[in-house]
Image (tube, rainbow, N blue to C red; front, side):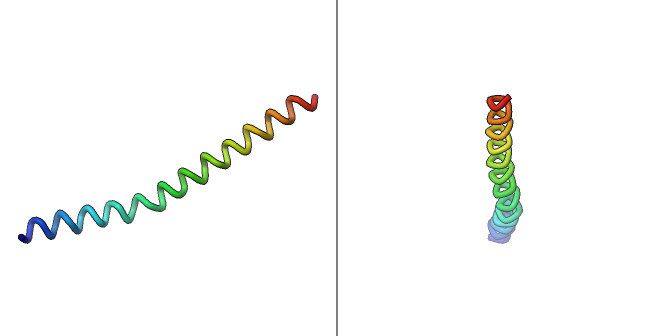
Length: 46
């Protein structure tokens, strides 16, 4: 029983630390897509 509780604690702890990383990754993907669009617009305006 104790091993099961420890596994649960490790699993939930891992999930808590991954959420901010996933949110940051999504933010960076969106930012990179916006930058790509800006670069494309600048190239077209030449």
